[in-house]
Length: 108
Image (tube, rainbow, N blue to C red; front, side, top):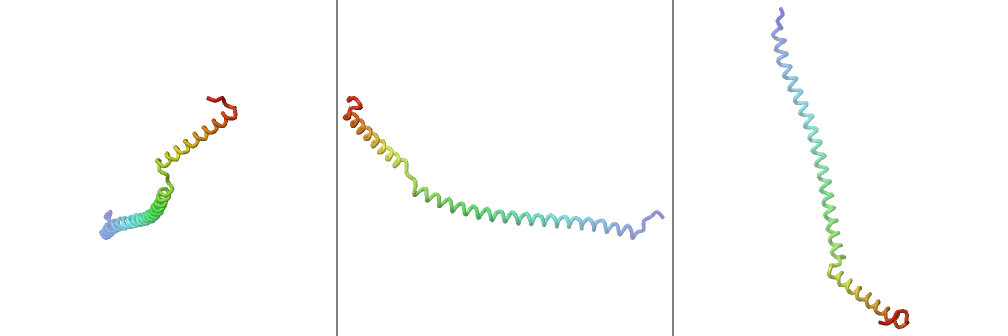
C-alpha cells in the first residue's frame, strides 16, 4: 500500500511541466516588456539627440558665416600693422624735431 496511485503520479507528471512552462512564459513576457520599454526610451533619446545635432549644425553654419564676414585676413592685418608702425615713427620724428627746435634736446 505504499504505492502512489497511478492517477496521482500522472497528475504530478502533467502539473510540474505545466508549472515550469507557465513560469518560463511569465519570465519571458516580463523580459520582453522591459526590453520594449528600454527600446522606446532609447528611441526617444535618439530623436532628442538628432534634434539637438540638427540645431547645433544650423547654429554652427550661422557662426561660420558670421566669422567669414567679420574675419580679417592675416595679410590685411599685417598691412594695417605696417601703416600704424610707420605713422608712429613719423610722429616720433616730428616730436624729436619739435623738441630740438624748442631746445629741450641737443641737436644731432
